[in-house]
Image 1 (spheres, rainbow, N blue to C red):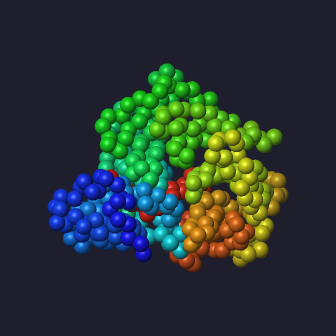
Image 2: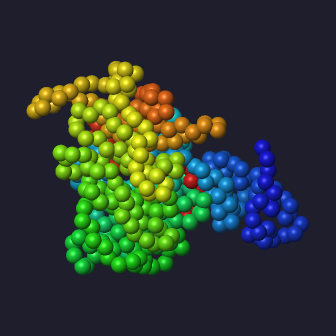
Image 3: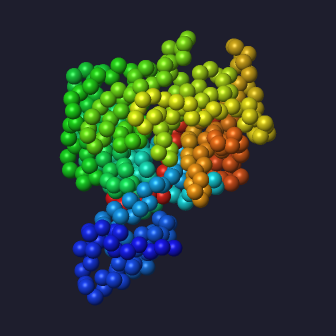
Amino acid sequence: MRACGAAELGPEWRRSSAEPGTRDLDDVLFAILALLPLKALLRCKLVCRQWRHLISGPVFVSNYSRRHARLHSSGFYLHSLKFVSCDPPGESLIGAGPFSGTGLSLANLIEDENGVRIGHSCNGLLLLCSSFRCPDDDRVYYICTPPTRQFLPLPNPGCRIEAINIAFDPAQALYRLVCVARSKLSTQHRQILMCSSHFGPWRKSGNPFLVSDELLFERGVFWNGGLHWVGRGRSALRFHVKDEVLMEMAMPPIREGWSQRKLDYFGESGGHLYLVEIYGASTTAFDVMEMARDYSGWFVKYHFNLEVVARGLAWILQRNVDAVNAVNAYKFSVLHIVHRQVGEEEECFMVLRIVSKFALYDLEQNTAMDIGDSMPQLNSIGWEDGPIYFWKDVFPYMDTPSYL
């Protein structure tokens, strides 16, 4: 294991050493702690006050974040749909087995009399808010880091909130909050408001803009320095967070004969922006598309065939007959695409909900496995008569080194 010297950690750390006699020792301690994985680092905070103060300091957090910037999703939270509509949605955490994640629970984290739900997630930060049973004007929003169990309530934007998204780049140890609000101009106009990690009041960004299609603003995807919003219509938007520029984003044409886009997955993983569209209940083969980094368009990255998966997972699949069309169809949904680093190689998996089971599909090797045994908590989620979870119910998390 190579220890990095203070010269590699920037002038901020060298200036922060208070006692010349302890500077060398502090440099060595800083360098060693900066190499630790997050789980071990959090345990080190319990050693003594000096270590806790060093690890929690903004200089260490900034350097640690840049050093460990290439993080991959460790797992994801699911909103449980087993509750009746008058109850707040529950959440279950998938964070073990193939994802090598740590068990991160949100239970008893925030005392909100209305209960809380997850509104958004980005690179390890979660946006929580009061449940749907709470009136809009009384709803409280929180920013949260599950590994450190830290949370902070957000200032009230003072507007009709359509959605709040997090834009967080771990390499910069800085997050911004982007609120899409309903404009007073008309029911089809929206206004973007911004708030940084230093908080302070919300401020308007740009002018109100017209929304011709119903976009999923609550599920904005942060990638390539911007938030991206898609819907079931023809239009899509991207908002470059640093420059605060709103632009149209090219989308594949809606398939002929269909009035709406059949969006089955839209998300970021491993530095890639992915899109899955599945047209027709009987479809068993589809493409996983990726956006070019220069936004020149979408291209096919992977081809998926459920018939191939069926041969490896025959015992967990069942055929379902549409009473009207008499079409045989597998009941499945795409939940998440996740990358995993294994040595120098990067693996890419798709998490599927098939009937009442969860499966992990290797997009490179075209193989699949049932992950219920390695993650027994999955077996208690949902009903037995089909997939009740979709990609919009999934909130990825990772072992982020960031502190609020």
